[in-house]
Amino acid sequence: MSDDSDSEERPLTRREARLGGQPRRVDPDSGENVSDADDVASAESGAPSEPLPTIASEPSTPVAGTPLTDAAFPAFDATSVPPRPPMPAPDTPESHRAKFETGDHNVIRDQLRAARGELESHVSQAREQFDQANERIKQRTGRDLIVAIVIGVAIGAVLLASLLFVKALFIPFAVAAGLLGTYELSRALRAGGRRIDIVPQLVGGLAILLVGYFSALWLSWVVLFAAVAFVMVWRMVAQMIAQDGRTYGDVLQDVLVGAFVQVYVPFLTSVALMLLSRDNGEWWVLSFVAIAVSADTCAYASGLAFGKHPMAPRISPKKTWEGFAGAFVGALVVGVLMSVFALHLPWWGGLIFGAAILLSATLGDLGESMLKRDLGIKDMSSWLPGHGGLLDRLDSILPSTVPALALSFLLAPWIGS
Image 1 (cartoon, one colour):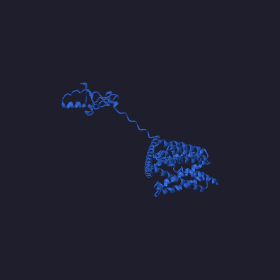
Image 2 (tube, rainbow, N blue to C red; image 1 turned 120 degrees about the horizontal axis):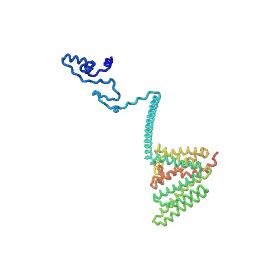
Image 3 (spheres, rainbow, N blue to C red; image 1 turned 30 degrees about the horizontal axis):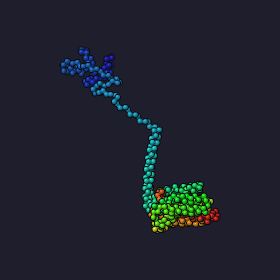
Image 4 (cartoon, one colour; image 1 turned 90 degrees about the vertical axis):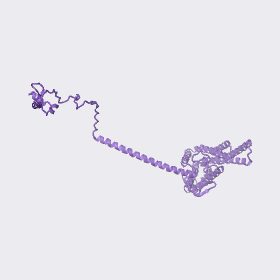
């Protein structure tokens, strides 16, 4: 019973399968494993059957970890098998939210990059257009517009701060401007062939500037005459010591030009300090400076845009009547505004004030242009980029100090009326 169950449960070997699936049995005579097919074959051939080699039965289930030894299944190394890739993360609402947020961030980043690129492109185009316009203006006027605006705004800010907060702060500003202008004009005249002594010019100019604010009006005239005499005597004594054969006419011109320097720069600057020393003098100074600057700026803008008819071609070819018309409008408008809101004068007083400053500023501008043309120079110096020299900016302001001081006395009875 047990043998039959074992034979039924034992799997067929390859030989048994090849012989038709008949199981093998033990021959009682020889004690070898034979099958019915072997008996039939041997009976048909009439030859005695030869014993077959015993084939061990293969286990039905291979033992774990035991390598296969059959030729059909060569041995292999289990460590050479690559590791199994990780399983994908489960699809949860949190993962959906993370993917959505990541996508939003990428979209926003791309939009920001595109917006930044577009902004940089617009800025680059605007800068190129501005540079081209500035270059055209520079070729026409000989000035760098950007630098001129920056320097002008900086000077205006210092001037405005000194007058609005503590008017005494305007004194060092005016003294420095007067001395620097004196030195600048003396150097320009020396370059033009004039004999100008810089040291006595600065000493006399400092005396005139200081008495303008701290002393009475009559004392300023006395100091002016003393400073002019000091400069003239110094020049004549220096000429006698030099003995360089200079003609009498040249020496006389040197003496007169030296006296002119004292009157033009230090004395006119001291007139502004005289005006500052009066009651509400800071507002008078601020008003006449604002009118002169607005007239100059409006003349520049209108002349640049509409200028076709030269005003004085032999003196200043770039000044036009269209520019003067713009200066006229600007001076009157600013004169009325400053008179009404700063000086508390009637509106007609502002018209008088604006017209007087416009006339003096225009004459001062033309006078310095004539002087520079006589010296054969374009600018007094190059200390102020975009403007030239300091006197190139003070040419319309310095002559305007005289009518401003005079009108402060003449219009005083109408203040507040």
